[in-house]
Length: 462
Image 1 (tube, rainbow, N blue to C red):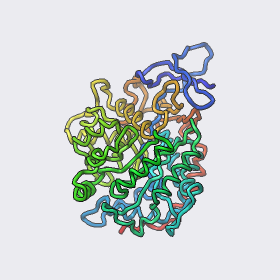
Image 2: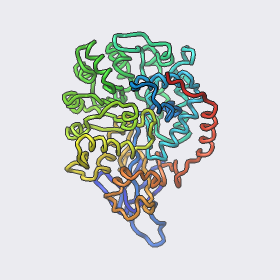
Image 3: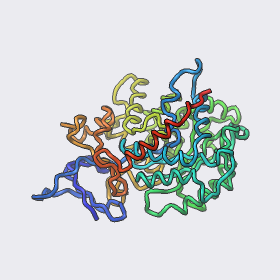
Image 4: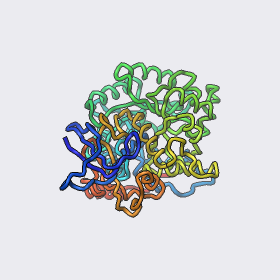
C-alpha cells in the first residue's frame, strides 16, 4: 500500500483540496480521503487529475506525420492521403512497428494519455502470407511497446475483408489487412487469453468500416465474440467521409449509422469512431443505444473530414471519447481545444460546450471524454475513486501556465493554453511512468526512432 498527498484533486464529486489517495499493491485505488497536515509530513505532490484514455489510435501512422502536408492537386482529400498511408503500411516490419509504437506511447504518456485503444489492422507479412494466431509479431509489437512504456492498452484486432461496399475484394495494397472470420476470431481468442485479469492490458475487437466488412460477417463475428467475452468493446469507423455515406446509401438505401441502428447492432459496448456526418436522427439513435462516439478533431481537421454535431450530441446526453487516430497531434488537450473551437467557429459564440452542470468547458470536456474513453476501452479508469485503476496526471501548480489558478480553472488552462508542460508526473496502475516530465526510455527510444526515420525513403504520395 502506498499513499499520495495532493494539494488538490479532481474527484467524481468535483474539485477537492488536501486529498490523500491510497493505492493497493495491485495498482488500484483503495481509498480517497482528506489529507491531514501532520507536522513533518512531506509536501503535497501537486494537483491530481484523472488520466485520459485515447480511444482511437493507429500507431504505425506516427511514422508519416508531417510528410503529406503539400498539395498534389486541386482536389487533395482523405482518399489521396490514404494512398500514402498504404505505402507506409506495406513497408513496416514488426521490428519497425515496435520502435514506432514505443516512441509514440512515450509521447502519449507525456501528453496526458494514460491508456490507448489500438485499432490494429496490420495482420499479415509484407508478401500477404499469414502468421499464426497466437504468435503474430505485428500484434506482439504493440503489446511489447505497451508493456515497456507502461501505458494501459486495449488491443483492437481489426477485421478488414473488402475494399469497398458490395463485397469488392481487397486490393494489392490492402493485402496485409485481410483475415477470414475464422482467423479473426482465433486472434481475438488468443489475445483475450493472454490478457491478465485486472491488469492494464485487455483485448477488444474492431470492424474497420461498413465498406470493409459485410453485415453478415459482422453478425457471425459478434456471435463468436459473445462466447469469449460478452462485454468485449467493439469499435468501428463510421460516417467519416461524405463519399462513404453516399456509397452506403446507394447500396443499402440507408446511411451508415442508420444501417447499424436498423440492424439492431449497437449497444453500450460499441464505440463509433468519427460519426462526422451522422445526422440528428442518427445521433439520437446512438444515444438511445448507449454507444460512445470517439471524435479525433486534429485528424479530422488534417484530413478535411468535416464537423461533428457536438453541441446537439452532448445536449442529448451522448457519450464522448477522443482519439489521436493518425497521430497528427498526440495531445488530449489539443483534441479538446479544437473540438470546442470547431463549435465556436460554427456557432460564432464562445464556451459552446459548457453545460448547466459544468460551466468550465475544459473541465466538462475532460471529465466527459475520460469517462467515455474508459467505457470505449473497457478499462476501470478515468475517475479518482476507490476501485478504479490508479491512473492520474500530476499538474505542477508552479508552472507558469498554472500559477495562481484556482482548481476550478486548472483544466481550462490545460486545454486552452497549450500547457502540456504543466504535466509533471504521470501514474498508470500506481506506477510513476513519467517523472519530472521524463520517461526511463526517453533517450534510447528517441535514438532508435530517429535512426530508423533517417533510413526511410520519402513516402510515396501518388
